[in-house]
Length: 345
Image 1 (cartoon, rainbow, N blue to C red):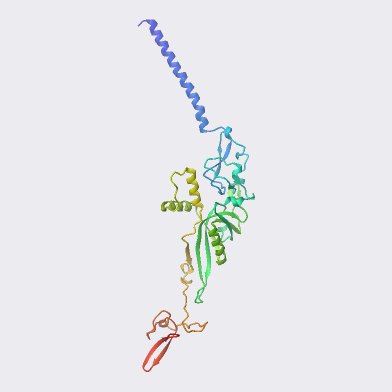
Image 2: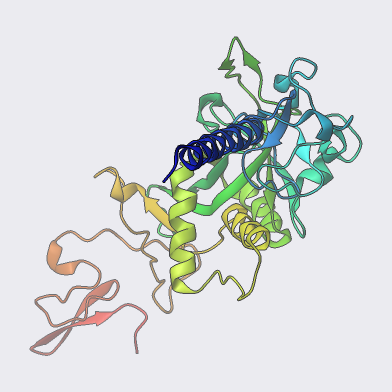
């Protein structure tokens, strides 16, 4: 190979290397800004939903947060960090459904005091009822709008045999959502801490049938609240899905599935009631309130005498062969003595 061809080949190789390096620089330089822009958009922080917020959801601190948003996509209806006070939005109610990650608009929230606020907080087919509470029956004020509670009824059962009254408590409702305490639906936050305050009434979200049940329960005894854990709702939802009580239709979108599960978690439970009597707590309270039947033939208002010996107690047989189901007398006919029931044939 002559010298001239060798120089041409070397020059072509240098040009090729230079072209490749230039192309690589151009490609790398063009891709970096795009990747950087995709990872961290340049713009203000807007308020977005942290999870799916169906209609009637009461806004809490963990349901919304500020997030960077592209400047060209920011709208006037968005809540902008530095311009909107997030604490003032706590306790507002969602008027339109908001998906997770979607910006929260000013028209999507209803503030306390606005017309139709409580009606917007209610789910479809639900009703609002108010019950009186105290510091003792209201969990010491540690109940806030949006929490879920169980409702317990405490009453005094009068024995039919004029014995001492029997105390009893039963859980009549479970998983009831709190809409408001007194006339406030807001959660007050000072210096980053939630303020606990006393209240005298609690407004609950229930079905029409449960509303009737609560109205009757208030006339029977004292109603008390029992605060539920957030984990209880998820656990009961998992059980309902496993048992087939809650069914997600095939082909449902993610938003539809989230709304269905959210409605199921917020639905009050009016089944499988439990009760505890005084006998389950104290040995001085009877476990039952037995009914005492009046013997046949006795005048109205007659009180059977107390038995003098265990053998003559009601419901036990005596040594004279009587059934012992009521007061008896001994009757002697000749040499035979029998025990006859008073009022018997």
